Length: 468
Image 1 (cartoon, rainbow, N blue to C red):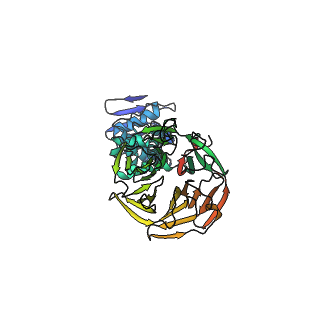
Image 2 (cartoon, helix red, strand yellow):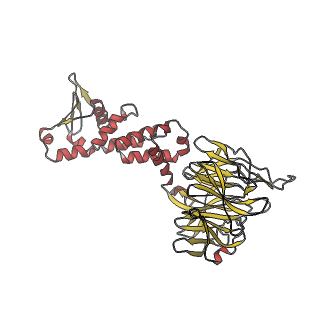
Image 3 (cartoon, rainbow, N blue to C red):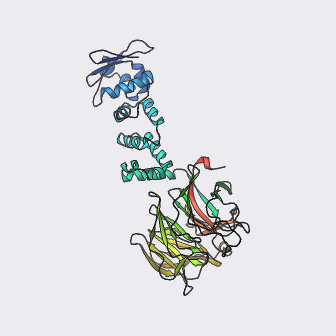
C-alpha cells in the first residue's frame, strides 16, 4: 500500500520490510524497495548491482519523466493496479521502455484490442517498443479490411500502413487451387479451396466456397491475402433459355486468417467466364460473357471503399475469356477478336486507363492458361502443345522446349508461379516447370478438385488453417 504525506513523499509497503531506496521524480520522492525494482526493471537491476553512486547512497534521480507516470508504474508493480489505457499511457510507456520494465510492457501488450491497437502501435513506434508494435500491427493485419475502411487507420503514416499490410503475409505460403467449372453433371460438385502440402505430396481442403456465390464459371482473385470470388452462373434450372442459371454479379471475400467469408458489393455488370486480377490495391473484373454474349466492360473493386467503378472497356471487337495476369506494372489478357477470330495479347495500363494491342499470338490459344514470372508471360494449354512465352520488355516471343508435360493440357488447367516454379494443376498429375533449371517435373499428386476450369493462386495460411 502506498502512503502519501504533505511534502510529496510516497512510501510503499512490502513483505521484505521498510523501503530501502529513494527515487526522486520531479518534486516527488518515492520510498520503494530495491528488490521490487531489481526484479522488474533491467535498468534498476544494472544500476543497483553495479556499485554506482546511486546504489551506495540508496537514492536515484529520474529526469525527463513525470511523477504521475512513475506512481502509475509503482501502483501496478506493488498493488497490481491496472494501467489505464488513457491519455497518461504515453508517459507510462515511455518510462517503462526506458526503465526496461518488462512486466509493465507485457501487461499493456496483453490489453491490445481492436479499439486501442492503432494508438498503441503509434506509441510503440515512437518509443521503439518492438514487440508491442509488432503485436499491434499483426492485430490490425488480421482485421485488415476493417481497419482499411476506418478513419482511425488514416492516422498512420503511409509506411506504417504498409507495415501493417505486410503482416498479412507472415504465415507460410502454399500453392492453392479451386475448380470453377463442372465437377459432376448436370450440377457442379463441391467447391473446395485446397492447398498443396509439398512435404507429403498431397492436397488438403482449407475452405468451402459459400453457397450463395456462383455455382460455376465464377472468377477468383487474390489481394492482400484475401481471396475474392465474383460473378458466374447461379444454380442450373430447367426452362432457362441458356441451359444455365442466371448470370451473377455477386461477390465475396474470404479471409484465411479469420476463416470467414464476407459478402462485398456486387459488380455493376453481371458476368461469367471473365478475367480477374489484383493490381495496385484493387481487384479488376475484365470482360467475360453473359451466356453467348460478350461483356465489354471492365470494373475495378476498391476494398477500402467497398465499391466498384467502371474503367475503360475492352477496345473494338476484342473479348476476354477467363484470363488476366499482372506483369511489370500492367494487366495483360489473351483476347480474341470477334470479327477476325485472331488472338492477341492486350495490355491495360491503369495509370492512363488505356488498352493497347501488344502482340498477336504466334499460335491461337483459346481457353488456355497463363502464368507470369518476372517480365515473361507464359501461355500454355488450349489444346495447343508447348508453351509460348512473351517478354513484355523486349516484346519478343519465344518457345519453351517441347515436353510431354504440356501435350495434353486442355482448357484452363490452372497455373501460377511460386518461388521460381510454374505449377500446372492437371487432374491426372500435377506438373511443374522449374524456371532456373528450365526443366519440367511430372508425377506430383493430381489436383483432386476437378479437371478443367481450375484456378491456381498462392495463399498464406496460418497454422490453424492447415491440416483441417
